Amino acid sequence: MTTRRQLISILTFSALAALIFVTAFRSGNPLSPKPHHPSQNSDLSSSVLSQPSLTGPAIARKLGNETAKAELGRSSWHLFHTIMSRFPETPTADESAALKSYIHLFQRLYPCGECAGHFGEILKRYPPQVGSRNAAAGWACHVHNVVNESLGKEVFDCAKIGDFYDCGCAEDEEGGTAGKKKGDVEGELVEGRKEMSREEVERVTGRKGRMADPVKEHMAQRYQYVKVE
Image (tube, rainbow, N blue to C red; front, side, top):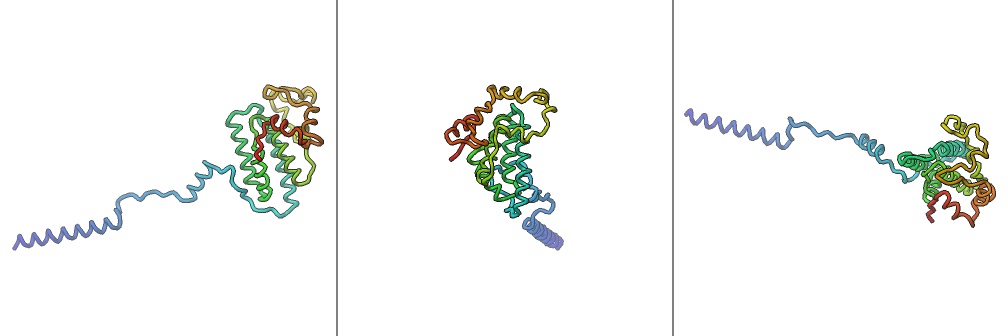
């Protein structure tokens, strides 16, 4: 009788243990740590910060207020040209990459959606030139003129763009041009070659800085434009 009771007890215990095991297996092990799943916002932030899309569509919506649009344009161009005028004459690869990224992100984030879309098309035709201060400033002046021509506005004389957007910072630079006469500055070497003289600039750019058709290729080579038809 005792043996029979022991056998029944063992079978009952085994069945109970099996039931507990099956239940735990189906529901998952409660003792095992749950895997950590970062939030979607965290993943999105990490992705955006590490790999920004430089050539995507404009982010802002259309800006209908013409007065606000004009004020935004004046302020933005002033900042844009001042950045180019303060760019190093001989930048490092990292500095050139930073300026190129800034230009593309400037276009994507510009608060006027239709303006940003138009400028994006211009960037496709005339990719940013970031090899030197001279190249960057010349490129910026050219694309500004392209925008102005599309709007029926007067274009800049690119020979005077530095004077127009002078930030007054020259005295802060070692060996800057503060105290020098304009004639002393003209003709200084940039990237191992002389700056264009005023006569050459006027011949190349035409009246008021407009690019004359017969010499567009010369200007393109001078500032290393890469025009995509």
